[in-house]
Length: 476
Image 1 (cartoon, one colour):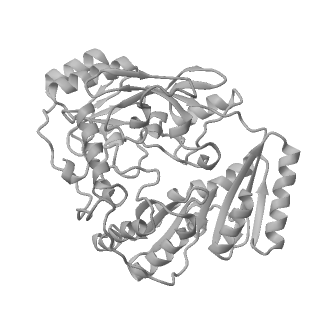
Image 2 (spheres, helix red, strand yellow):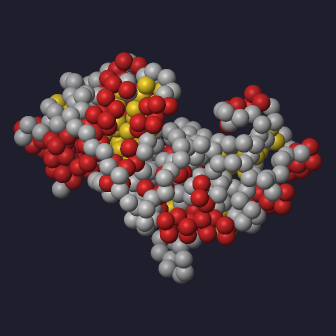
Image 3 (cartoon, rainbow, N blue to C red):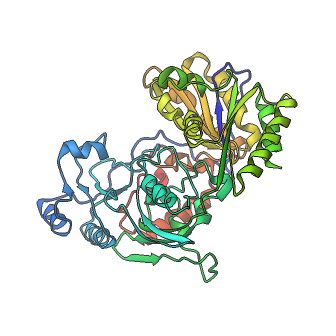
């Protein structure tokens, strides 16, 4: 279930500051890069070694590097094709004390996949194969969209769907514990991932490619790597549970006058349009409304599913909860309606510089963050808009300005994080911490929990060659 909210003036303001659950929260510093650790620098001998084990796939051309590393052109780009390639590369880098930045599709939004200084970029772009597939699960190293097409040809689907599906990688999805559009139906990757193959920092390969749905023998180690953002190891293969492709899919695009009405309809269901129109020329299929929601249903009986959906919509319309709406059953129209939700990020790029926040909140608090943020910022921001997943309380808050504005940023942060923690939310629902949010982790995790994370990092990567830029300053 996708949620869109159109810009309009807010009404009230809240500012808060609270103590952290584990004691007083450390004062976070801006999202500046941590100091470079005393790593070695790449030498001609290093390049010769890499060229020997992955001939033709050791890249130093600045023009090619720019696509993987926008801000810095001092790195080396390595493109392994196999787990053995990754193992040899990490083993060598560990012995030479060379820092490594693993990178999948480079579609993240928190600066987690690009090097900060001169780290070696380890790209999984060529590890794009399906190892095998059966009627229960498959082992994958694949670009997400090609994997989805592979499954659909066999009457299965991926348990998650993402706006960046054309370029993101399944290993990166797992490393960031991506949520996506199907979470409310199929659950998170922490439940659908059955097994992993991970190359550790010293080059050892952890073969955890289980296909069992139940295995209660000792610690479930794969959970350490799901959402670890590449800091503990490089995910080289995934076993994932894939549901059958639904025989019937229906999509409803509905509009409301108030957020309270939206929540009422959402409860019944369970028992940013201006930018899209202006910048992407995507037509609004219904009348203009302050709030929009996209609901997708799937099932095994097209006639039965269609009848249930129309009954639900009729009740919602007659109760005056819904202002207007439209339904799609054909694939082309379904894709057109979903594009209104999936292309909001693209539309925002045309509205100026965008400050992005990925917040998890109790569903009833989602719109309050909009109104409070608008009141707090007033005319300092060009737009305060958002979209997200109302089914799981995930809000993508977007604040735009004509250009990058440090004064505006200082007004947003840490206000947005303080507001979120006041209402028992999380500062990162699905995007991860990366470089941008690393020093704000204490708003969502107790000091003891963060300290334990640091100990796990030290145990699995004692030299710290895998990304350390996601750790808060006090664990550097």
